[in-house]
Image (cartoon, rainbow, N blue to C red; front, side, top):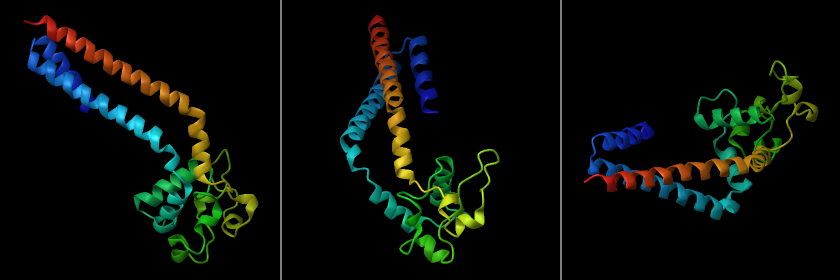
Length: 183
């Protein structure tokens, strides 16, 4: 919606030969450009502060199981199923100190941690998994799986970000050119 509005504002300003609309367009694009630049710098500066222990603490406090309707649990279930992982560090994340263990004391881990059949995407053996049989559990933690995927695609993310910033710079330069041509 915002991009549509900005595009419309720039085109309308050029068609109407309105310096005020063009200047508004330029300022809004400049603000977005600066926000993106600040976000990129902050991401680079604070990337080392993203640690497992923060996510582990949140998971243990807020995760309420497979059938929970809260957004936090649904998101974690989707992550664990999509990345074939379990918890932040591994299956032990759902142990004694977790909300999951308090809600389900007889179950070692959520069904989202169970290995799925690659064709039907159904748990290979749900009962053996929930009893703690390591052959049926995704033993790798999600933090390492996501970090590994991020490392694999970081160059694409960086390239895409640079392209977006260059397009915005081009839009600003063109706007300044059009602005100066109007009397």
